[in-house]
Image (cartoon, rainbow, N blue to C red; front, side, top):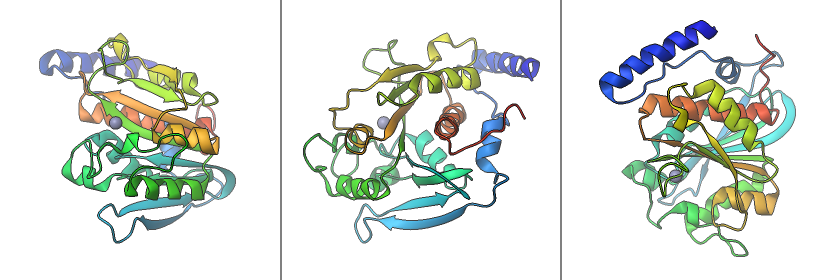
Length: 269
Ligand SMILES: [Zn+2]
């Protein structure tokens, strides 16, 4: 497997030189196989409901119950409507089969923004609508927060993409895992480096950074008020094409589920 990986990286490098973008082939990673296929314990059971029904924000929430008890994880895509990796991967995750616990997915969190392919929806940047010591500041944010409070998740993962790279491009936050103090941020970043970052892109290695919980972002509020382990995942548009960003996002989501016990990979199989 190792040799094949290196060869794949080499051919991708040749493609990079020609096209100016990196395209990592989508691998049959054991984590993704575990995520996509039902485990030995049995089938999952999925319910779909509408959040904010009858409003312009109406959007779908998918709740997947695994055959065994375990933690509840929530995954959000489309809090920023032009960050297509998170939307595409969250849609895929609605078809995943966790082995334990409950997996709740909202692929198009700010549906107006997603439909317009724009960062912000009708009330501005949704990920600034969850300030400390106040209720969420827009109708959409209140509807999303109601859904979060109701599920009382143990884990929250919010999927994003940036234009540049954290600590490399000023003002940009790509290739980073922002996380609550008790989350497995370093383990996630290390695993992503092993799984998805080619050797010839050292600046694309992921940075894990503990977040300040006093801020107005959804993942900060969930950590602050529900004591959930929370993550905000960022990849980058810089030198990565859409399939590569999607693959990194997909692997990040599967790894978070594994780190928190919703997904079992059964060792080296
Ligand atoms: Zn974003």
